[in-house]
Length: 201
Image 1 (cartoon, rainbow, N blue to C red):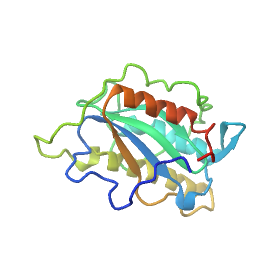
Image 2: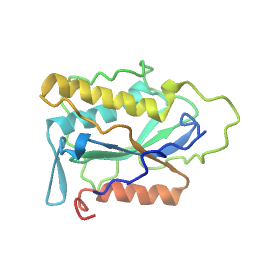
Image 3: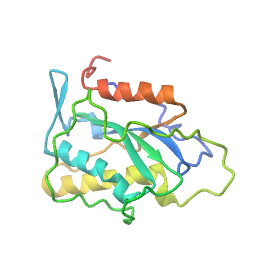
């Protein structure tokens, strides 16, 4: 598998405020690592209907969490990689919806960009260095955990309503705090190359 392998007992950093401004590399894995979202064909990800819905829910994250921006991401057969940026202030034009649950729009999804193409928002990103906590934690509704939870709920709800799949996600998720521009570049490349590297590791 090509997603990160961590000790399940130390996924989160103790005492770290996951609502503070920063750049986070997130990996969310399907239950039992089943290929629920499509398949890799000749190095390209071919999403099925479930994969398209997962993509749509991912792209709607900023509508529910107006202080977030999305950077590079990829829907893979059995997991999702994505970079989420939390800003100091809401992004202009974002809609301040209640964080949970996600309600995917009924519109049809546009084709996913090829892995070699940059995501629309992945240029000119301001990098926030994680800093020591000097103020009380923000509302839990604005943390990375709540963002991932809302995304999972949205995809799960759709799949329960439209498929016979009951168990969609592996418990918890993996996160890495991106600390500088060089690291961000390497992670972007890793995400873009994920389909070509499928099953090689």
